[in-house]
View 1 (cartoon, rainbow, N blue to C red):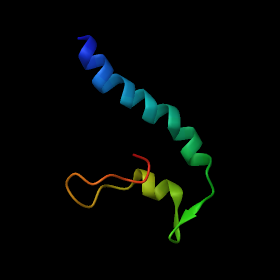
View 2: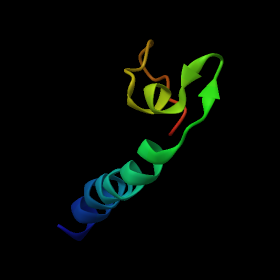
View 3: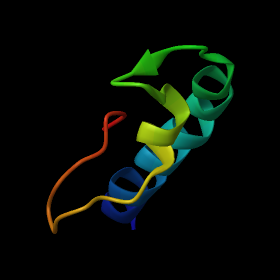
View 4: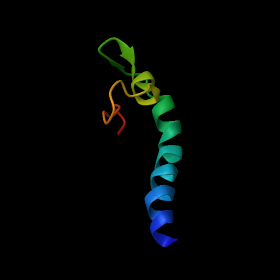
Length: 52
């Protein structure tokens, strides 16, 4: 159970904790708002977004 909480719970809390910060960013990456890179779906299996 502890392994489950660490493996699933901590990343989930990290995303929820970072959401207000990401939403406040007024940056553009390659002409796209930063929030779109974080919230967008991965284009390939195993690929990652800019936010992790």
